[in-house]
Structure formats: structure tokens, C-alpha cells
Image 1 (cartoon, one colour):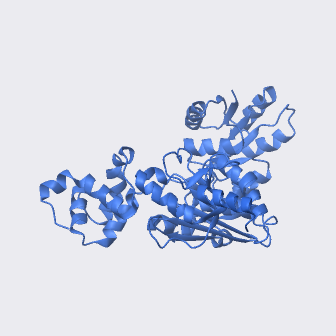
Image 2 (cartoon, helix red, strand yellow):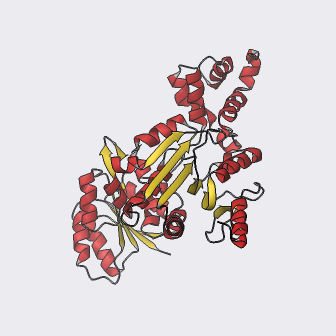
Length: 292
Length: 121
């Protein structure tokens, strides 16, 4: 990459850094996040002994410091998450979706869940907690929870299971805190039993080396909103490829499938949930023809 | 409109909590210690009590014990809100009948989350 003249670097620091984010993650920096750029990057400036974001952008343009680029990307990603975020969604998963999946998968006795764009892991831990609280109901089942995120820092934290006092007070009930977490200095750590239930993996949703197999429940909440329309469709294609006719996809509260291609359609039974369209219709066709 | 009784000997904490709770569309009353809170609960039970642990006259735990034998039409939800952040304190509070536990310092999101968990909002 050619090094732009110093003036261009000074004028375009924000553009360069948001360009790096987009190139590495596919995420575009909305206006709402762009104004926080300097605040978000302050720890990176300190850690790499840089003067300001213009200095940082100049380093990024020279492309000599992979660690610096990684730190910039991690800092610019929005890792906001909380336990049982949107409580109604978790109630629907618990009361409606999981019982349906359990009915459908009675023979295989496997449950596969993918938390795509899991951030620091609260969503995956919330699911694990709900499942472990009903251990008897899932006795004899093989349960897999895969949680992936583009941010190496977020995945590292998620895997550690360590959360601040503020984190464990957002969405997590005191009963679950006592049962599933242990004090860890000033923080709290998910216990080993809970941590063992989840496979955390750094993964890019555009990377062809996607997870293998199909999932019964796919959560991709508050992720698509950071992508362009084209990339949203690419993510939905990927999620569809890892779905079967009975799979349920859940998006974030403010996200919709309207104008996002033909991979999923609103689920007939689960409000706010989506079913893979082609597979569902294929399945209906097969049933009509008496196949399978 | 649901009512929250804030029980804390600190005027500042009561003020901060009131500000947050009113922004969540709750009406707020205040008590300066457990005894004051008990008197108010017996007169008119709130929907939820935000309860400090260490207070003069009657502590949060003493209030909780007294509340169990108080004559009331309906039992309010109890959310402890304290600087006692050790797990032994949290367990003791839950065993004594607390519905939720907030470790100070707290913010709007924390209170909102706990109120939703106990079903008040």
C-alpha cells in the first residue's frame, strides 16, 4: 500500500481506521460509533505510545505492525453485551423454541446452538445457564453450543468466563450468579461446568472456513446492523447453509429480514424468529411427494 | 404506577436511586432506616423495596426478618442494594428472602435489569 502524503493522513485518520475495520471485519462504522472513535482508541494509543489518532493512522498505513492493527480492530468493534439480553427472547427460547427442538430431535438427542457474533459470551452463557438449570430434562442429550466472534479480545474474555461486577448485574439473576459464578478477585468467573458447555472460537462470518454441520438454533443478534446490505445477505447465506428445515434463526430486536434476500422467512410459530425458506419449502415438497 | 420504597441512610444514594426509578416510571418513597421502612410498609405496601444493608436503628437484614411477621396485604419484592459485595453476604440475603441483589455502585441499566427480573417493570 502506498503511503499517502502526511497531510492526507492527518485529514483522513478516521477514514483510514474505519477502512481497516471494514477490510478486516466487514463492519461499517456508523455515525453513532464514529464519534466515539477517539475514546475507543485511547487505550490503544497508550499501549503503543502514540500521540493521537493521526499518529495511529500513519502507523496503520505503513502496515508494519500486525498487533497494532489487531488492537485497533478490537477497540473499534462494539462488544456491548449482557446476560439474558432481551429477556422476552430468552423466555421464548426456553418456553417455546427449545421444547419444539427437543420434540423434533427426540431420536438423535442432539441439540446444536450457534451464537454467531457472540461478543464477550454473555448470550452463550445465558443459554448454557438455562439448559443446565433444566439438566434433568436434557439428560442423555448431546448439547453443543458454539459461540463465535470476529474480535480476538472478545473471544479471549468470553473463553475466560471472567466478568466484571457490573457485567454480572446486567440481566443475570442473583440465583444464577450464586449457582454458576465464583468470585474472582474483584470480578466473577463462570464456573468450570458452565465454561465446558461452550466452544468459543474466533471466526469471521465471511470466512469460508465456517463451522461444520447444521444447527437447530442460530442466534445472530445485533450483528447484521453493522454490515452493508450486500454483506448482510452473505451472512444470511452462510447461516442458511448451516440450517436444516427445523432450524430457528433469531436476530436482534431492531433487525429485520425485509430486503435481505430469500434465505429466511418469518417463522410461523415463533414471533421474531425466522425459518430457512428454501429448506422449509423443500421439506414441504418432500412431504407432499411422500419422500423421506 | 408501581411504587418503590428506597431504604438507605444516605441521602445521596436515595436521591440517585429516585432519579433512576422515576425515569423508569415508578413512583418513589423513601425511608432512612429499616424501622422507618417497616412502618411505611405496614401503612401501605410498596411493590418493591430497594434495601441497603448497613443502616442505623434497624439494618436491612433486620428489616427483612421483621417484614416476614408484619401484617401486610401483599409482600413487596425485595432488592438488596449494598456495598456488601461478598458471596457470603449475597447468599445470606437470598436465604433471608431477598428476591434480588444489587452490588453498589450501580447504574440505571443495573437497576432496570433487576426490576425486570423481579417483574416490577
